[in-house]
Length: 139
Figure 1 (cartoon, rainbow, N blue to C red):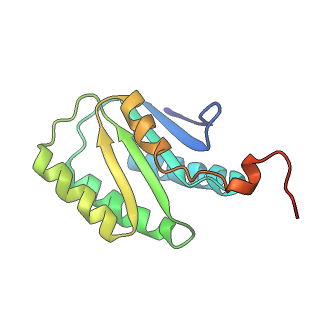
Figure 2 (figure 1 turned 180 degrees about the vertical axis):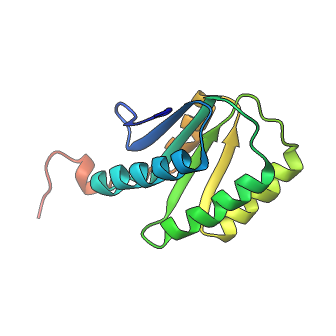
């Protein structure tokens, strides 16, 4: 396999790191496996690290991904950050793709750096209810 799927230490985020060239079947299998891990841990935040992915991926492939993601949102609302340090698609096409994903019910952003992608994902965490912050609850 040329990918790794794991939980980000200390955060409710499923991260998939792609390494080398990947076939469509491997990408599909990774998607199924990361979704299973997320469902098991009740996680809705995903980080796809394509920094080490080899090969050129077209804007058309990104639109196919948007359709795939729509199937997942029937289960729960997800947010996905995709890291690609060698982005070769123009920013207008990226914005159109992100808008398409939102229309399919998925918040997705493409980033050039993992740390910025992680920061964006963390903004989606909901703060715990005030009662949980207090060590003593009075009734």
